[in-house]
Image 1: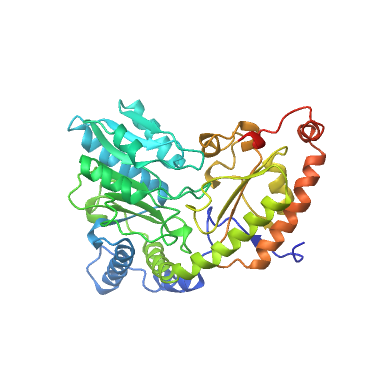
Image 2: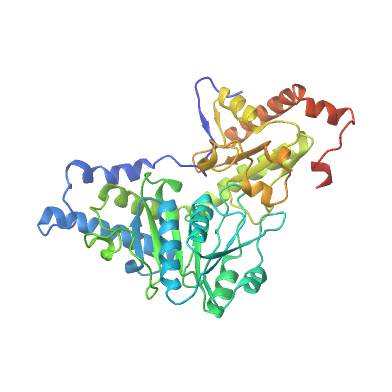
Length: 404
């Protein structure tokens, strides 16, 4: 049991708490250094300097030039802008074929669907049972009219890490632009966009201790792409509108701090992750780990339990002060099972009984033990109330998980 009134937050893939040091860095830009960065007087130019310092901080982490970084309102905006902006420009060269995977974030999949309505053709690559796409699949899918390949770096639900460097090499050799949604990967994995031959990348501050509502797009110099918002000359004339200076400052500080402590963070979160996976798979029958056992984010645990509904599990965890998820935060209002879990071969009834735990640097081994204690109590309790589980126990139906 958790301590009374204590919240154990295990949904860091959905969002992270803002680092107090990041907040302190942001505060002056609300009421003291409040100048418009487009103004020529000193107050405005101090805001301009702060923006450019943040741009340099992002560029340093990604291994690119500062002028290749454009600030946005978040990961979804960055995905939309990069994909649509590049696709529309490539269409002028009669290239209207796009390639992605079945396990992308909806910010990518829904953008692809919107482009299909405009006449683009989209190839959606399947993944294996661990959620991995092979570079050879990408190579085979590329055509003379392929405009863009976009593949998520690390999946937000099952934590699987794609072979990004090899995919980048395939795309570069074929002369096709390559974008990756790296919202879950930035500060959780080493990234070097030049070495990995990534042409465009999306990230979001609130995934690594920064504020919500601010993100960035990396777009390699020389690539033609449409403006996001026309108007003033902000963001090199690409995204007009007065800049969110406090948010941008927070993003820069957060990415610098999180990157500096990344190695220790990976070690710490891996220990918590492995403890939970090992204990739950040992103590709870008909339970399955989703995603690759080794090629996964350090803090990600995704499990499916046969014979229960995930919503009941989440509510009972919440009653114990434990915050968890059944998948992407962006689909939490949907009754449909996760498209990611379906893509790796889970049937609907098993996908509905899924749980995602995502650890952060603030979590402790006591948190990991507490969630295991809770699940070892909750899962049998829910199964006792389930007619599906009764049929499984009495042998009237066969286990789906046992056959996977």
